[in-house]
Image: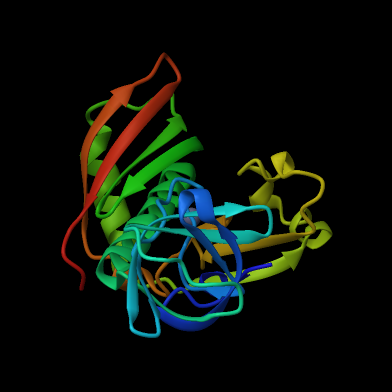
Length: 242
Ligand SMILES: [Zn+2]
């Protein structure tokens, strides 16, 4: 079982680990612990490197399979063996951009729900760009500037971002979580990771976020699209940090 360090510390960008399993056909390496985000919830996986003795492997894909996170590496050099030590290092610039983008999308969710009562139905992101889908019948062009200004105002308010892992029963008691479809969580999941932008947004979420909204930088709402009468898609871009 891979210990997922990013779940408790999104800022740790290196770690020492050991190989616990191999997927030799696909050049996949599972570790006992990792700082690599394996992807999910709209946030892409991390990239980076593995150092094993003199050898350096480039990790180009990460995927969680069962309880293990498999890291897929380029090249044709012999893979490390089960038990070998690995020094992991993620591409921090890319990851931090994703953390800022991911947190910006939470601010957008919080603002759109607070000001218009619209619920989010999905989202996707790449570094410094993202989109979110809402059940937002009243969305129209005139609201773009208003939403952008409200999001930037909240970013500038330096809200703390708090991450907690709660027992399932306790998480299900939180009224704000019910609206984010927490009830769709599979029965087998006994713990729920909760990400709160204090005073603005609360979601069950497995991704990586910054510690304070002030780290995001300013955002722009670049476009929106109707995906039917009710469903609207908003696009954002994240500007320079600080
Ligand atoms: Zn999130």
